[in-house]
Length: 334
Image 1 (cartoon, helix red, strand yellow):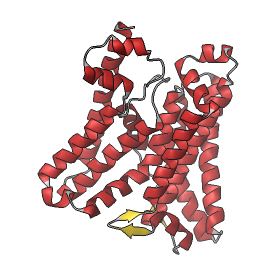
Image 2 (cartoon, rainbow, N blue to C red; image 1 turned 120 degrees about the vertical axis):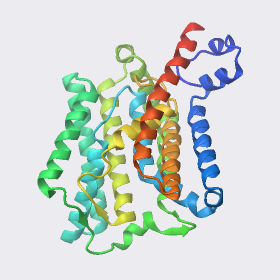
Image 3 (spheres, one colour; image 1 turned 180 degrees about the vertical axis):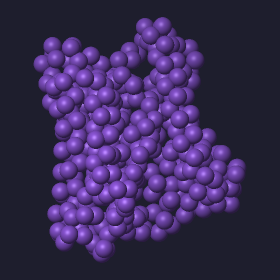
C-alpha cells in the first residue's frame, strides 16, 4: 500500500478498480505496458511473438532501467536529478578514455562508478545546502556537464580501441538477444527494492518526501538521506553508461539527452508522486519496461524515433493527470 493511504480511506471507495490503483499505483504502468504490447502485436503479429524481440525489449530496458529505478527512489524523497543524462554521457566518455589510455578495465569501471557517484553527491550537497529546488540545481548541472563535454570533444564520439573481456559481464549473449545486462538490471531492482522497503533508510526517505520538517522533528537526518539518494542516482547513471559501452563500444557527448525526462516519466507512470512521499523502485522499472517495449516496437515497425519522444511526452502528461485524479479521490475520501 502506498505510504499515507489509510485502510479506512480505501474502504470508503466503492469502485474496485480505483481501490486497486490506490493500493497498487504501479498497475497504471502495467496497463500501459500491456496496451503498448497489444499495439505492436496488432501491427507486427509475426515479429512481436518471437523470443528474439523480447530480448531486444529487455536490452533496451536495461540501458535506461537502472537510472529510472534510482530516479524513482530519489523522487520518493521529493527530489529530481536532471543531470542523469549528462552524467550517463560523461561517464561513458570517461570510461572509454581511460581504457584507451591503458588503465586496467576493472579499475576503469570502478573509477567510472566513482565519477558518477561524485556527480550525484555534488548535486545532493548543492541542493541541500543552498535550499534551492533540486530541479533548478540539477538542470544547471545538466547544462554544465553537457557544455563541458562539447568543449572537450566538439560533438565528436569516442570508440574503444580494444575490446576488454571484462565487459562480457554485461554484454554476454544468453541467446535470443538476451544479454547479461538484463540480469544486472534485475539485481539493481532487487537491491533498490530492499533498500527502500527493508531498511531504515527507506523509511527515512518516505518520511523526508512526505514532510521534511516533520521528518527532521522526528530525528531523521534529512540532509544525509537526500545526499545519499542523489549519490546512488549518480552511481546508477554511471553503471548504465558502462552497460552502454559494453553494448555499443562507443559514446557521444550528446548521448541520452532525453534520459532525465524518460526516467521521470517512467517513475510517474509507475505511481511515484512528483512531490515525494509515494512510489517505489518497481515504478521506475515498469515505466522503463514500457518505454523499452515501445522503442523496440518502433524498430520492428521501421518507424522514426520521433514517435518515441512523442510517446514519452504523452505518457508523462497523462501519468501526471491520472495521478492527480487518484490523489483527489484519496483526499476526498479521507
